[in-house]
Image (cartoon, rainbow, N blue to C red; front, side, top):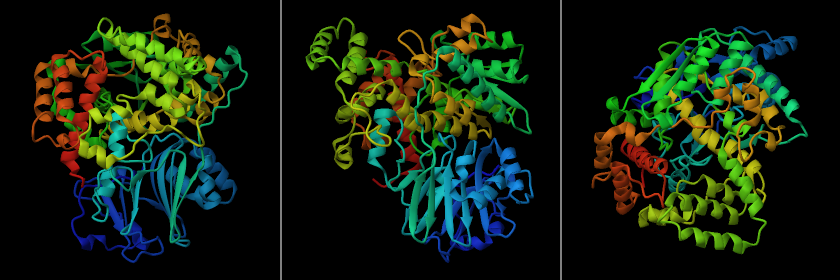
Length: 633
């Protein structure tokens, strides 16, 4: 499997002299850290002044070229239907030289051109260079499981699966992107295609990009489209089980042993049950346990493992062993600020799993495909209440403000919901998603940063306009389009790659994507329950206590896990006059936030305990980024 990513240094200009026609020889040179490689084209052979492509070859495998040397490919990921495609290509007269899915991608491109991506089922990011047409073609999988970044400027076109791949090139400027900073504080991640570096973009999921002497051309080969059918519960259950089982079967194609994440929630528990009881696959499962009971799902995971009779490994996050320096180690993997603190347990469990297996099955995507988030129902409620006269929401908000002192958390949550009621279109979805409301950025950012930011209003609009009276369906769409690749999939890819672990996500396989788009919303979630169909399916294979378990989320109690000493260390580093975040974040905001964090006494009228430590994590992530890359401001 070839990965498109970078290494940290280019030693001298003489190393940047090989032309694309000598690609194979150039790729034999490994970077000084053993991970990276690069190649260049000083002669700009038609590729719109393209000079440098930075890559990494995982496992030391060489890239593949076509038999006539015309096409060359760099591929990162897995193609699960490559055997079926192989048979089609052989029937069409192609002679394949290897058993690699990389060669299948290359030959499929030769046969079908850019439309080949429509046939691929898997997770991937790849680049193909055609020496005859002198074009470079890049593409990314449907939901964004594998990342792909690019930069086009006077010095050429650069691409890679990590930002560091592009940033080691002297022609790529490190200019800070203030819109990404605003996105980060509002949502926890920059919205695609933005990155934290102005001019460097992330290729959107389900999208291809062609680079030639004529410039850049972008197209979309897949997008999420809800097309709910008039299915009853029985039909939806039947279709869901078939789709998930089909996807699981595809994801099991491997020549190495597999393991699985098992949180104890519905998603991972159901996948594990289907693996064991339907597909007859016995594999080891791995769980994270927390000392704080409100976050600890390990008893449920243990019950699932015992019920299925499979080996179970538990990783305990003990606060007495917490190390604040671990945050630096984790945040270093992302190359840009990443605000989801659940990266910590994800990093640790990936490290543990890699000791036993190289490939693991994960439950990511289940919430998006089957209605796992409570906020979807809140969006539906806001949609209904928006039909009432506007004074109803205004009067309710005024009344709730009177209860701020006696019931601060209820007042805060209710007012947030009422904001969503009066908002229109995708702004309603943002109201329900935001850590910090956009208009509150003035209380967080320094005036100089606000001036450079200029007018800012984030948008969840996808293709065309979102309905003015948006609800849970539109919220599902925006979550799949933005939060899934920007947050959840980015987390699992970065944390697993840090340990050389490959994580596969069957809930995002093509059969499940197609099935989920047809399930009516009322069979996904309601006022009382989430994941209605998944729970019905789980009832066939799992104990009742698992089926009826409410959603917990895979989080970490960051404040208690760090302990008093660790919290003080975090405050000392972020509240210091030398802290880089002081260039962007108001000192009074930082001091008040850190004080609440250290004392574990958040002002519940402003933010919850979780929101408090998440915002501290934001500051830490931003500080690590600024120290590491020192971008031009």
